[in-house]
Image (cartoon, rainbow, N blue to C red; front, side, top):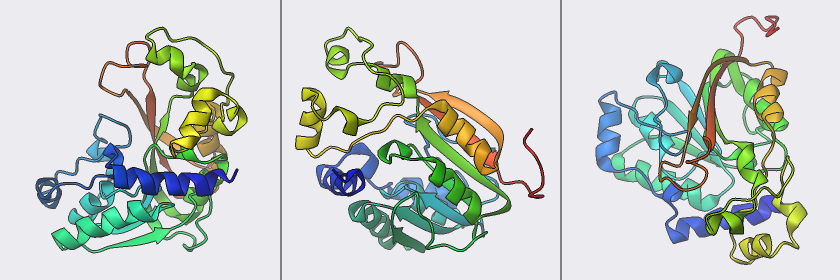
Length: 264
């Protein structure tokens, strides 16, 4: 199975279904961004600290695997020069719809987050990457490409799933008695004979990959980034895993001004 193509189609389907992460922002949210209040999410509930985003007016900003009409239009309303990059044509269309409705200027590019050859080296001041690398099998290429397309001193803000969530058997979670079942790193494609995973595929939902903290955080360091910020988040609904541990993590990282700077 080609997981990338499956997930492209799955997210197009999620747009048609009105998934929470495919619904464009309101005119009121856009106006607040125009007034300087940019409320964007890397994870489900906590807005990204304003200091993580830096100066937005005039900044070259890449929304990486971040379609859906949610972050890109707000950054454009705040004065950034925005490119939204996503695998899903449907998700990118949501950005174009909001931009047309609000008179915003942004660019959309379709592709694989692991391959940013559509962009030259040092093209962006900020890469904004919400929880989405769980939909690709390898994430080290994501970090390396983000590093390449950032200018020295540029920043990467990223959200990702806590990999511990993937250790549990989902039917047992739904039954209210979470049971450990899987080793990390977890990959849906390795468990297609599992009735639950098979149903996910039949229903056209996206395939997921857990990755490890070594790949998520250590991978950023390996790519050359310097970590400067961190927070945790949850679904905010009280359902698993909120009662047990934070299900989401977010990081702020910089590309060194001096590329000979060591993170050691």
